[in-house]
Structure formats: C-alpha cells, structure tokens
Image (cartoon, rainbow over all chains, first blue to last red; front, side, top):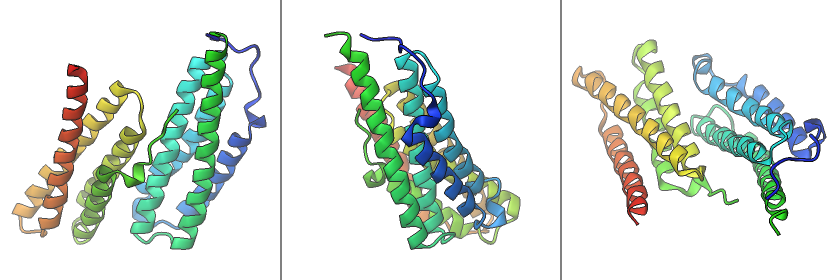
Length: 131
Length: 116
C-alpha cells in the first residue's frame, strides 16, 4: 500500500481548487445580501464553511502522505455539504431567491463531484502498490 | 468513497423544519435571546448535515451527540420562554421531539451494529 507521494503537487494547479475558489467568491458576495442580524450567525457560518473547503484542499495537496490528504479531503467534503445546507436555509428564510440558489447549488454540486473524484483517485493510489 | 445525499435524509428535513419554526417564533423576542436560539438552530442543522455524510463512526457519533446537546439546550430555553407566555411553541415541540427520536434511533442503530 502506497503511503507517501513521490512529490508534492501545487494545489493551485488543481481544477477542483480553482472551482472551489470561484464558489467561495460567489458565496462571499451572496452573504452580503443577508440581514445584519445574521452577521454572527448564518453569514459567519457560511463564510467559514466555504473558506474551509479551499483551505483543506490546499492542506491536503501540500501533504506527503496519502492518508492525510484523504482526511483533509473528507473535511473539505463535509464543509462543502455545510455550505449547501446553509444555502438551503438562506433560501427558506428568503434571503436569496430560487434562481440564485439553484445556480450556487449547482456550482457546489460540481465541486462536490470533483472532490469525490479526487478522493477516489487517492484511494486507488493508496491501494495500487498492494497489488 | 460513498457520500450520501444529506438532503433526502429525514433528520436533515426535521432539523430545517425546526430551524424555520424557531426563526418564526423568535421574531418578537429580545434580540439577544433570539440570536442565541437561532445560533443553536443553525448549529443543530450543521452538525446533523456533517454527521449524515460522515463515514467515520466515531466522528459520526460525536457530531450526533453535539447536535443532540444543542437540541436539548434549545428546547429547554424555548420551554422557559413559553412558560413566560412570550411565544406559542406547539410546532417547535413537535419538530423537536421528532428530531430527538430520530437522533436516538440513529444511536440505537449504531449501538446494534457494535453489538454484532
């Protein structure tokens, strides 16, 4: 079982990182529309969750060990699902309209698929040396 | 790697129903009280979302426990306010109880798995 990578990749080359960064920018913009009383609640939570996706991707890519990268990816997936949940809440409370919600949720789903794809590739790499 | 769809999970649906109801009934409360209750409601939804997609059993249990802790705290706070006649909380009680039962069911399922 492969434990260590041969070299550390540049996280900025990852398509998933770029997509996550774009999503992060859109979410930061949308959060400005939320009411002021959500400043320390929903707005704060959504910002933190979206930043967490990019941060965990970068941390995982910058790690020599496959296992640690996989853990960071798992956390990034969790944070992304949190973002989607917060978008559901924002729509329910009518802070954003349906169109904005659909566009953002579709983007988030794309990033999720890419994250899962990356996680599967790492799992495969970890098992390759076993054969 | 399998990531379940948290949106179709009944715990998530109940958590969002509860959150919506809490936001509704706390509209006329003092800002500080309302903010605390709403914060708890958001944390419950967040923890449950994370727990649903989590594959690691230990982390899943931890997240579900944290969600349950927040749920019990918010129901206690709301009950106190309800006793002071400051709000009508029938639906919150319903959703809160349902969510509590669902959480306990999850714990039961995970314990049964441990037993085998």
